[in-house]
Length: 362
Ligand SMILES: NC(=O)c1ccc[n+]([C@@H]2O[C@H](COP(=O)([O-])OP(=O)(O)OC[C@H]3O[C@@H](n4cnc5c(N)ncnc54)[C@H](O)[C@@H]3O)[C@@H](O)[C@H]2O)c1
Image 1 (cartoon, rainbow, N blue to C red):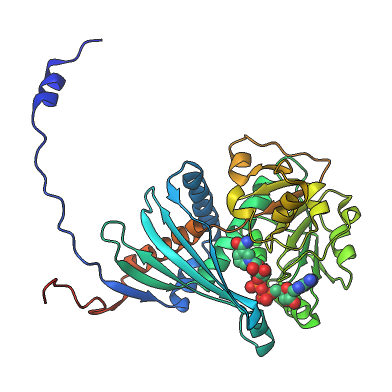
Image 2: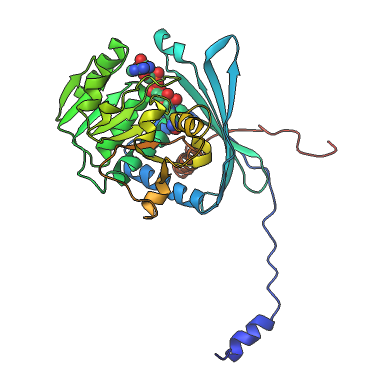
């Protein structure tokens, strides 16, 4: 191979000196829930694509996603606040922190269990440049990853037409919205919740959507599971309460979003897919209990990314359980998307002079 004269000359020429743009402190903005919701509404397909692209970046190593930190309180044992720091590369190129609390007793007082903020930090200066209401971002990315899982994990089997929602709060509602908006339709929708009020509320939501399906509220968890080919767990159970593997004899696809519902015996009888192995095998999730029981991770089939890239194959003669721990990089990707859209619409609420002490010696 010969090198052309002009390209040899080009390589001998000094690089033109282009000064890097001056580093400046970015303005700080606050994005309230109404703006977040307005931005994300109707974008379900786009957000599933964004979540899948983020899984690809994460699998390629273009992310930093340390373990979540769980802040717990001796005086409030059911409550927790989780910190999810993360950094994402690619075109998103942002760092940040999701700070999300779960106070299950809120629900009986009529306010949502979870509340959250997301802080975005500038890649070059480290400065925080936005604080976003983030319970909607969190529910959105959770529903998007569930919809993505439902799609990829059912490609090798006949597509489920009977869905069962086990635990019917806000996350169940978002997951149903995402399934419906990404092309799923069901003949039967089963509903089960310990709280009759939640089950009735969720049925009301389903009826409002005009869902063309038979809706059945099951008092018995066994009936719900046995009559569903797609089972969505979205409870707030802290330890396994579904223990009989025989309930899964029909080999359903299980979206185990609440992570701690299934006894390890059920996990061990199933093909198990997670989003990130090290993340998911922590904090007493059902896969973590299975690891503690067996002393190994042989029961894991792989990650969702492994399925997306054909590296993991799924059986049809066993249940398939997807246990997504939920990665901070997903919140960052969705949060940055919201920030960009609000900026593009010229509707960013900038807090003037948020960073004030900017000269080193005054
Ligand atoms: N994996 C992830 O990334 C991720 C992300 C967000 C939320 N979540 C989880 O999703 C779950 C649901 O969140 P939410 O905001 O909808 O909560 P929520 O409080 O609004 O609803 C939970 C519902 O589950 C019901 N429930 C509790 N225990 C039950 C049981 N044993 N059997 C049947 N029903 C039961 C409650 O009565 C309630 O109606 C939580 O566990 C949350 O941690 C997971």
